[in-house]
Length: 469
Ligand code: ARG
Image (cartoon, rainbow, N blue to C red; front, side, top):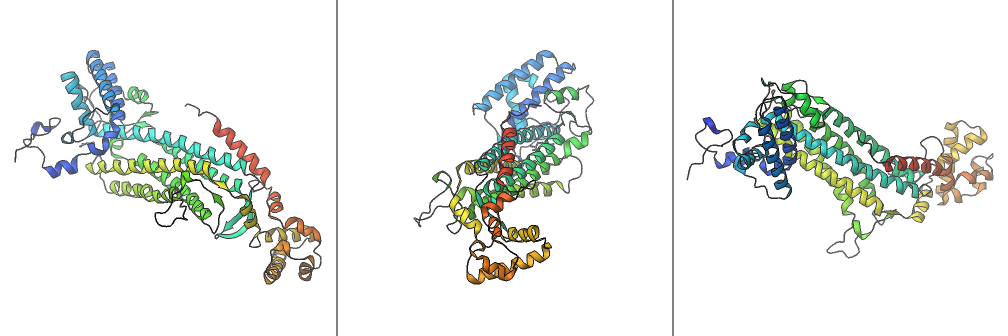
């Protein structure tokens, strides 16, 4: 076996290269090469600052920055050759820079370490992804709000315990998810605010003796400020954890909606129709139409919430500052953000595609004595009955309907009057699902007029082009 030479980037005091298995466990290039664009952005800002501060010459900075631009182009053209023996994206880029511009490349790493470099790259990457996810969530909310407006008056059963509870409108149901997603977005925005501090210049852990300008690099990279403590800057990954936590909560919301789609798609419910674009067939049962996309959205949450757990476990026992354990922060985070982004987009597609089956929904809304509360409320309003007593009287009327095997609407006035003689035929006005939803005009209630107003407001807000901050 021929002996490998030591790593040329840090191998000054090393005589031998790595064992095969060491290279395998140590190298991160297989996954951190996605940080290439962020690594280059950071290095350009660093080089410009070093020159501005007179730490390197303007000439060296120019050739470094030009070289980095070439590498950037190579990466985006898929021409960059990544080498595992160079371990990671940072050393691959620097080594390529040396091929391109020669010794000046060696000046780029002045007043910097891979510790602040990776903290920077990872932050930039997550910030970019958060911005993309925010836009994707906005598109999903808009799709939901538009469908809600179209179905502001479509009556469906509302459930508690998955038992028919009270009639609601389809639009109102969809707008519930718009509210949840709005909170998800604001959680991501909160996380973004806190992550927007620049770790570059913390160097290995203690800062540097070079007269760097951390405010300059922070500004150039779009950060609000440089991080205030160099040890903290290189050692924490709470910014990634926060985003993963926010993504997990949001994925939970998507998963609940996906489960409803699965239920609604069963022949037993038949609440919605979904086209061939978002369903699959079975290889053995010709009659099947399976809601695979919705099922996968439910399935993906395991990876997303799992990534949060995984990173939390990586971090929990680490003494300050950097430890190589932290290299494990990336794969799970990349995978989780990919899975989450895919789920959001798939959900948008499904929302556009699905159509409620209006007649089936209406018929289902009337089953299960779903307007019993309306009946009780009528007794309270018209007969000034205390609600508790009205509840009891209604219960007896429901029992009478159950005994006859009919819905409340189909029970005769005589049957009702046998339970409560003061009931008049006016009661029938409140027993239809349609009138039931129309009456729910309290703020945040399901009445079609409320839904139309709320959906329109959301659409107006979501169609506005994003303000650039
Ligand atoms: N590949 C490393 C990581 O992902 C980069 C930082 C390496 N730093 C070090 N001191 N070995 O964390």
